[in-house]
Amino acid sequence: MDFNAKPAVVIWEVTQACGLACVHCRAEARPRRDPRELSTEEGLGLVDQVADSGAPLLVLTGGDPMERPDLEAFVHRGVSRGLHVALSPSATAKATRPALLALKAAGLHRVAVSLDSHLEKNHDAFRRVAGSYRRTLEIARDAREIGLPLQVGTTICALNFRDLEAMAESVGALGVVLWSVFFLVPTGRAGAGLMISAAECEDVLNRLYDLSRRAPFAIKTTEGLHYRRIVAERAGRRSGSGINDGKGFAFISHRGDVFPSGFLPASAGNVREQPFGSIYRDSPIFRSLRDPSRLKGRCGACEFKALCGGSRARAYAATGDMLAEDPLCAHIPQLQESRS
Image: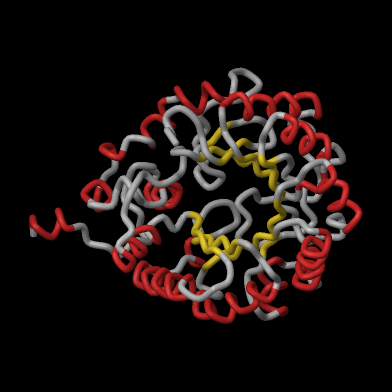
């Protein structure tokens, strides 16, 4: 896919309202909906814009997308326009089996839940709501029983990175098709103290690769782009240009602002003023992020920069420069080694 022409994945934060108060929340979600969020009519128009951009996949997230009573209409519109539509609900009482059944009937492609520890008390502490762990398992069970493919997301941070194998076992027991492992970016409520070190990240990535060799589900990383380097080095698979913030990927806020990532708060425009597709294709921010020759530091010198490129969101959070090197990568590029 030509990422200059169209994105592969678009995530729309339909609302910031949420009943949880997670310690790492990017959105800094709150209990009530923002009156400035896109209306139903604007939301349906946005779904059309995403379809017109050529993107194949739209993910509805939040906050908690279940806070929107018009969610089913968005799913139906997306499916009618040829999009695969996925949903990432919060583990609250709103994600009921009847609600999931209605969304499946509207054409929902997949549901994704978050599980951040194999231990109930640790997960609930992370989400800061008692019962969140059990509610997550209930939603996962309902999705599986009604035939909705299930994805689980886990945020890797200083609180849980040692428990990777136990987490993988818990994830596998849920019958998932995909485990999405997110490497924390210090933005929103997430402080830098929650991040693991670059050496710890390297160890986690290698353990993930070992797990991928025997797990009955697929594994992907989010904001852990250097997993592709690990796979290339250990499996000899090195080809193509990988998705990254602004490069095959876009995030749209509840107010219509378009960002390269939900973790990279640099707006490239607003869909209330300009079509999403033109923002993605033509904005200077997105164009610069799709040009690996503009990367700096070790990322700029790296032999894997087209495949990986490092987390642009984490670089921005650490330095204020979205083109700087990713501080969570321990790799020393061959070009840099040859100069030393």
